[in-house]
Amino acid sequence: WRFALGTYGTTGSRFDYDADPSLGVPSFFSETIVIAFPLAAAYRISDQVSLGAEIQPMFGQLRTHFQIGGLPFRYKINGPGVQGMVGLAVRPTAQWAFGLSLRTPGMVWMGGSMPIPNVGRQRVHADVQMPLQVLVGATWRCQKRLTLSASARFTNSSTLGDSTIKYELTPQANIGFLPDANDEWKFAAAAEYALQERTTLRFGVSWASHIVGSRGVSPLVFDGDDTKVGFGVGQRLGGWMLDVMVGYALPAERHIPASTALVLPGDYSMQGGLVVVGLTYGL
Image (cartoon, rainbow, N blue to C red; front, side, top):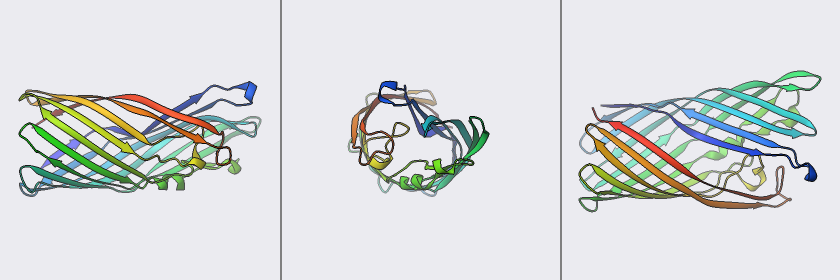
């Protein structure tokens, strides 16, 4: 048996724009966070086959500031959620290993309220459907020091478009949590080289299709086709393994014409760096 616990952000984005009165553009702000706390167990059936499962309690939060028809919308909603996952690992030979995992659909229940000038407060509520996800991968130890891996992932993220942010007193402003959402495909490849007995070098590259369709892009939410490159090193320290990785998301730009724009047409671009630190202890 093996047991594990951890935490990670399944979604995290922030878009913050100042107003431009000369163009009649108000300020826009949105921040979405969904944090998961997976508790997992795996059982090694034989030297070749292992099974695993986990339950993922979650916490979600959405903060946003924008205007519709001159009415300011400014609120924070949050709440709990849950999702699950099962996995299978098969190692038919000493050189090859294969993995298959299925993340079940889940839900995050978020609620709160917002002020309405000269009226009071109205309830804001969103039941966000977390999407099903399927991942397959393979690893090949082609040399004593060199290991190559590849994976493909499908995320049924179009279900995020079925979730609606609902306003108690202004239902005409109800909007999809992620308007015009598409399913996502992601492909990744990696190499790992044992530089020394205790030191391992790693390299990886991945590409994922965009989730937000053209009719859903706005200053409150957008994305692009996501290409990342990462470099890392792992160092064994007694029973501990310390892993550090730095990466870069290549620039991605989308042009949204006025005929399909949800709020504002124009060019939307994104890029950025990332840092990952992992610590593992073997019992």
